Each structure stands twice: as structure tokens, then as C-alpha cells.
Image 1 (tube, rainbow, N blue to C red):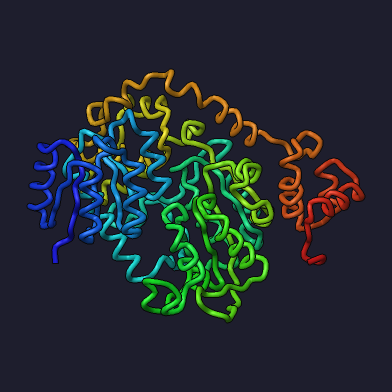
Image 2 (image 1 turned 120 degrees about the horizontal axis):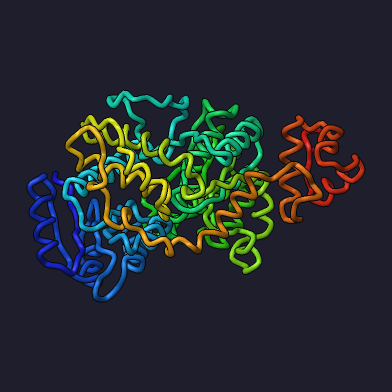
Length: 479
């Protein structure tokens, strides 16, 4: 049976062109010229993939994406957008879009992304979201054996990159819950995987859940499971992801998207190490380490009443801030060369490297979509390259001629990330809001030797004990 694709665009000529191309590639295709027409088709028919323009006459890509997720939660949606809308495309990824592609589109690039989306859905059906633990892959130039994911975490040479690796090494052997904070596309999930791979749980599953892609109705079922007949549509028993992650790590991406009610249930599961399926009256014990990621300020969400304060403090036993790509200028070419290897293997190409002009452009560009955008740009450039080196002509015009004023608002973010990279282990020099995190980090570093921790923090043992009591920090011998 041929895969089905819905193409949504108000340009009939473009729709016809894309429909003809995908039909020749053995896809069954339908078209819609407005958001309303598209939603009617989604209600009537199951599509394997949806391709939608961001700008439509009666709606935009974000609203349409939300509506499609409510009607058919599991359908991958690919957003087509111009580079002028790149920041909005990143928002679309946050709320559940599978991928975005920039216009003018390259048909081969569209084909590649559609096939990747179909392969991902097949993998999810074969093993529901549970990713088996594996050893970290060595970076290699062998294009026949690339990592299977879109991009894996690659250690850089910048100061902030080395600080992240230090944090990973420190927290991985513990069972502390971790919050990973960073913009969309910075590789937060791969930091989580590194923590898992370096932990004592590495031989157990790493289970990843995108909370932004979960509908309000299905979030509890996805996390905790349900029994047959517990609600409309529950036609079979379902095992929740907590159970799939037993003994391993459960990674909750975009944790801030969970509803307040689900937050209550999650807090109970973490504190009591027990879960209960929807419709059941029996608890099940679970042993799972929790790592969460977010691109929003959870402390601000707590103040606004959108995120439970008790859950925040339970999760915030250790925090890692992943900087944006524009704040890692020394690492950009390292990531670009890694993505070049992936693209060579994916597209069966033999591109050797980037010429010097392209490398300079990469370092100059602001990368609002971070690593995800860099990966897409490199893949597109490799696709269009006929020689051994990627040249400027294969890059989108907006990257080559970016207006510098567009990135002026990023200065505060750069300053914050630089402050974290240069931050000394001196308790008196830190703001109160980071004090608890610093104490925990220091205790871990000295293997919970309180005398050494107090010395590093430049306080006496009594003050350290008082602050540990204030922040409810328990060591192994006190828990």
C-alpha cells in the first residue's frame, strides 16, 4: 500500500508540481489550498505525512499544526517556510512539527524528509518510544555507518562546550533529576543521552517523550498507560513509558507543555516511585531516572502559575544550560563537518569539505534554528554540490546576506551563556537563585565530603549545613 501525503498550499501550481513529483515516487497524494479544506480532509482520511505551507489565506502553520495534532495526534507534519519565517518554524518544531523545509523547496530534499518521517513512524510502531541503550558512537568519516539519528551530540572545543561535558561527567553517575535548558534545536536530547550512556543505567532503556507533541487527552495514557475501556478509544490495554523505561532513564522534552493535572500525577510518580494506569486501582512500582528539557524559563512559569513549584524543585536537583549555536562560534565548523558526514551517507555523496568562504559565512550567521537549522542547511548544500567542496552558491540567500540587525536582540542570551561558562565556584559571588544548584554540584564533585565542599564554597561547615537544611538537600547518608 502506497504511503499517503497531504500537500497544503494556496499556490495551485506549486501543489500540482509537488503532487506530480511525489506520485512518480510512488506516493498517494492529496492537495488542499486552505487550512479549512485541509482539516476537512484530515478528519476524513488518515495521512501518513502532511506537508503544509506556513502562510495560508485563512490560517497560519502554527494554528493548523495544533488543529491537526488534536484530530490526528500521531501524524507527522512538515512545515514549508521561507527563511524570513525561520524563527516561527522553530516555534512550530517546539509544538510538535516533525521538521521544516525552506522555500524555494528542492524536490529531492522534500522526498528525503518525507521518507525520514515515514521511517520514524515505522520505528515507533516496532518499539514504542523505547530507545535501547547503546555505547556512544565514535565520530567517523565512514559514510556507510553514520549515526541513525538526525544529529548526535558532538563535543566542541569552546569553553562552554567543555563546561557542559564536565557537568555531564559529574552528574551522570548519580541518580539526580536533571533539567536541561536551552533554545530549540540546541541538542538537549543528546545531552540527556550522554548522561544516560555515562550512568550506571546505561544497560537499561533510554525512553524519550516529546511533551510538546502530546495532546492533553493522551498525555496521561502515554506516560502511565491505561486499561481497556477506561475511556473512549481505549480499545486495548496500553503500557506507559514509565514502564518501558524501567531501570533506565525517562527523558521528558519540553516539560513545560504538560498540563497542571499531569504535573500533579508526574510529581507523585517521581516522589513515590509508583504509577497507576488510567482506569486501574492498582499501583505499579517503577525505578526510573528523570531528565527533562525545556526552552522556557520554568521559574518564570512557576511565578505565573503555569508550572507547579513543588515539581520544579523536585526536578531541579541539577541544571545544565545548553548554549545556542551563535554563542559557540568555535564549534560551528566542528558540527558542520559532522553533519557533512551524515549527509554524505544519507545522500550517497562524496563531498569532502566546505570551502573557506562557506566556513566564514557559517561563523557569521546567527543560526536562530541552532543545530537543527545547521543540519538542514548542510544537507541541502550537500544535495546541491556537484564537486568536492560546498560553495557559497549552494547556500540559501538569507544565510549568505543576513542582516546583522536581525540578531541584535540575542546579546542578552550571549551574555548569560558567557557568564555561566566563566562562573567560579564561589558561593558569595552567585545570585541566590543559583545557590542551591551550586551546593549540589559541589557536593557531587567532592563525593559529598562536606568539609571539602565548604572549603570550595568559601563558607564554614555550619553555614553549609544550614543552607542544606534550607534548600532540603539530602545526602546519601541522610536520605
